[in-house]
Image (cartoon, rainbow, N blue to C red; front, side):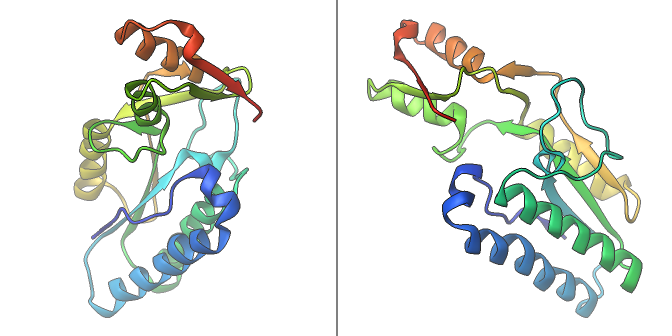
Length: 194
């Protein structure tokens, strides 16, 4: 079994904390109990690199201390710890993946790249937090799914696997790439308070 279910929007987690706790923590507990009840062979829990918090100087490794900085990240970190507790307490074969920012087809419009494209297609400004220098590591959703499949087939019980591309780009650079692709000026960028 692979648990892709999650509330995953950082900004929305600030206003809708209860939904994030219910889905990301309580929902994970329900699935873990189902793994035990149904004697499922392997359970892969999809998490996020957000559980590590901000690391300006280096890429986080699987050994980094969890340091979530939003209700979303905290709910995913709590779910990760719950999964690991089931490995130790009940002996289930569970593995955790922590992916960086995904992009690709059918992504929800609240995420950065679809939001930029959607706004530009409607001739609207692109909201970019702060000075746009927040760096994200991007991975295409198909590459992420291939890595998750590898963890499902060849991973080890109780292990955590970071999944990332080699695509560290600032938010303002992403905006400029899309503006350039659509032959639009940088005046579409609207820097808003973070």
